[in-house]
Image (tube, rainbow, N blue to C red; front, side):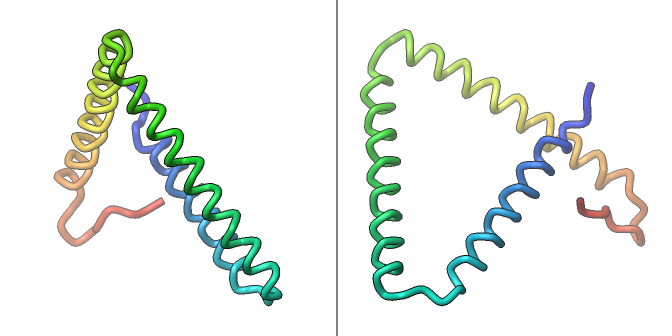
Length: 103
């Protein structure tokens, strides 16, 4: 079985890089007009996400969608469970004075 940590590490790395870029961008000097535009964009983004969530909620009433969502949830649960098992194995096998290395 492939190492399940690889994809999770990539997700963490990409989110970390994105967060840093967003932080640096936000720290740059912005005019009040640009700040207002940014706030408006964030509000529109939030409304779009809320609309998507509402749409998913409506679709979830369809029995076929419920079945697929359940199967996807079970697959995600299995994937996370296997990942947790691998992490626990790593902690159990690591010498007490040699903590696991990140990334």
